[in-house]
Image (tube, rainbow, N blue to C red):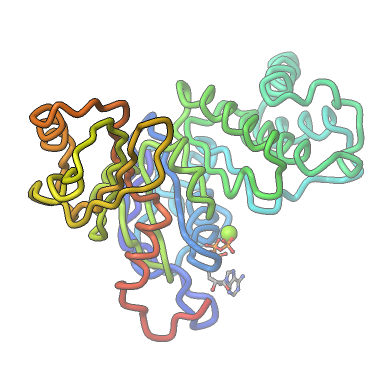
Length: 318
Ligand SMILES: Nc1ncnc2c1ncn2[C@@H]1O[C@H](COP(=O)(O)OP(=O)(O)OP(=O)(O)O)[C@@H](O)[C@H]1O
Ligand SMILES: [Mg+2]
């Protein structure tokens, strides 16, 4: 649904996007992740046909965004970072205006505007001026705008930026509903966002791709150690050293327990999953176990590690 190859964008000599390549398959929700100035919005503007690239290939739904821009734009619903909403138009009026610009007319247009207002939860405010709406409602109007022409692909630039926690949850739920019918590329610098909502994560930093994988694989691939936490009941004074004898366990630390249960945290070398061996050790010593789980590092840890080892291209500034 998206094919990007060696895409580069320079602004007045400064490279904002530096030869990136990635693909998004139909039906995927992909998170585009990176710090401020990484090149997320620039890439999304190019993909939505709002800005030409300096070089490289960008295709959406099989259409080249430069050479087949009309077909490409028809396939894309784009929600920009700062949605250029007309503040002195009413919600319904604005959406009808936008729908007509995108080629919908008459009864079809009015029905579709009704549908997207319902889907995005703005039916109640349809007669309000956009300028008087809260930020969260404006975001919803922008999303309704992006959806109105039935695009196959949604490109959403920080859709939850500036929203309160309740609104963030609502947008996430909305995205979950949309995934059955749309392919979604969304940008964010909130790592938790992609951890929960996305099938795959493309990490970008200084205009280059650092990683492209599922959130789970990214967390598992980290070179830093993982933690296994467990709660056991045993009088065994040697429990910690028995746990440390398990291959892969670097250190076992006893922490405060409660009601006769003892808590241990095990620092485990990267690439090892010691849970089964821990279970076997507990069984051999007749320890009772009421908790055993592995904490995978967060995407934030992954990002920090990748960014710190990545070579910063010359001339790149944020
Ligand atoms: N119109 C422009 N003219 C010159 N430089 C620009 C322009 N737009 C963006 N840049 C620069 O290009 C780089 C990438 O910017 P971009 O907006 O794509 O980043 P981003 O990943 O979306 O960041 P943010 O998280 O802050 O939205 C930055 O260094 C930025 O300053
Ligand atoms: Mg941006």
